[in-house]
Image 1 (cartoon, rainbow, N blue to C red):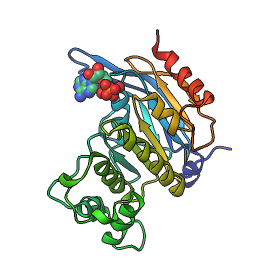
Image 2: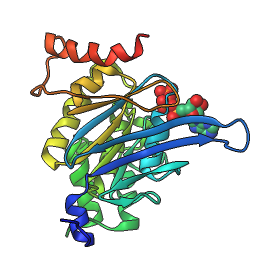
Image 3: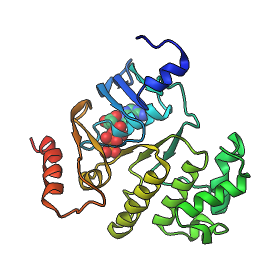
Image 4: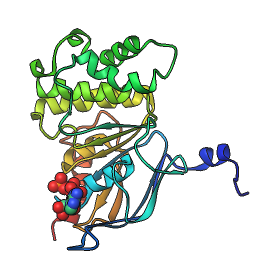
Length: 260
Ligand SMILES: Nc1ncnc2c1ncn2[C@@H]1O[C@H](COP(=O)(O)OP(=O)(O)OP(=O)(O)O)[C@@H](O)[C@H]1O
């Protein structure tokens, strides 16, 4: 049966769908083709990692689903609706946390809420404190970003993205510049938050091990122009043993696309 109502469409549609997404930068000049017909869908509550070689278009894809950039052709839909710009349904976390240095940690987290309001009955400050608690930073509410470690700054970025309670979290290499030990801690924390909040996560990384540790499914992109080389399911229970045979087998399968 065809679903025609808006409500019906929302029920039936995937959380995010990439439908033949292509991107050409500078089409009138040098014409650099960054993405070519990217096609995949993300289920509600799914944790999907996007991996691919440097320059294959991962961040471009991220910016398109975030609504920060337009596709040249094709379409991205969120809950069945075409993306036309950023929105409170998609929280973003970047590699460089982009915190406001003149605001406290709490002030950074309240920032987005001041514009769109809180998702429930909470006050702005109450909601922000709850999110800081989720990322283990309650004690640092009054600190300024410059006094935080790289890992703590990324946690603030995550708290800020969670504050408006978006159903979808978009993350672009959020842990690329933290040390390995902190990264492992952040992985565990992120998975806890994801499991506790049932959000859909789209996570861009060039780190295959990170993708295999985190994802339900990995979207492997080809060299530029990026298109989908393979959708690799990671059918392993969590927490995952990064040194186990099954883990390494998935890593090898993903890496096999980059070896030619
Ligand atoms: N605003 C832009 N204008 C022109 N070209 C761009 C722009 N942004 C990205 N590109 C080009 O598009 C291609 C894809 O870039 P993108 O940053 O999406 O790749 P990536 O996979 O995220 O790379 P990395 O893993 O190195 O961060 C690259 O060749 C890049 O130089």
